Image (cartoon, rainbow, N blue to C red; front, side):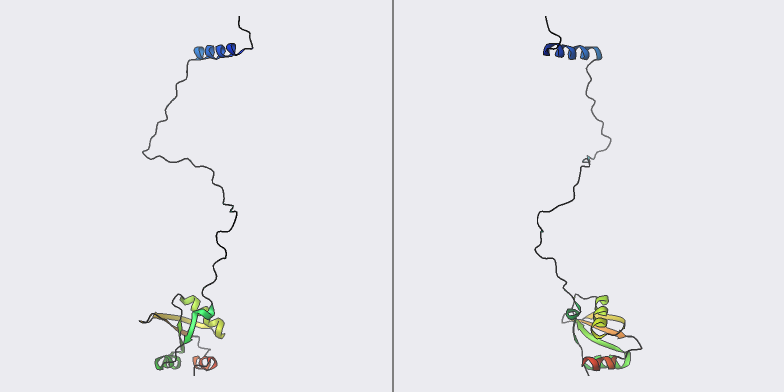
Length: 146
């Protein structure tokens, strides 16, 4: 005789329910596309134990590194007289807005526009056109070109 609470009776009960209800067959999932896509899983934000860089990147170009020196050649002087333009040799990595900011910070003048070209020797030349209220000759004398 089998007691009611024993393991055998529990196993027999499972078998009896399986026989009554029928064994459920595993249904294979029908895939409709040829591409298998990985399921989306939890992505945690990174919480590093230590910084990967010892120091942050320093600012490479400030106003003193952008402008190298003003040009004092005869064509540059002609630009100053005729077109209210000062010619500088600048860093090759500097772009027009950076050159404009650097000139306005260093010499306290307003710049109308900047044209640049890279010379055959690899240096960058910037033609800085000043606003009509500021004369290039006065700025040049203040800088010490003339």
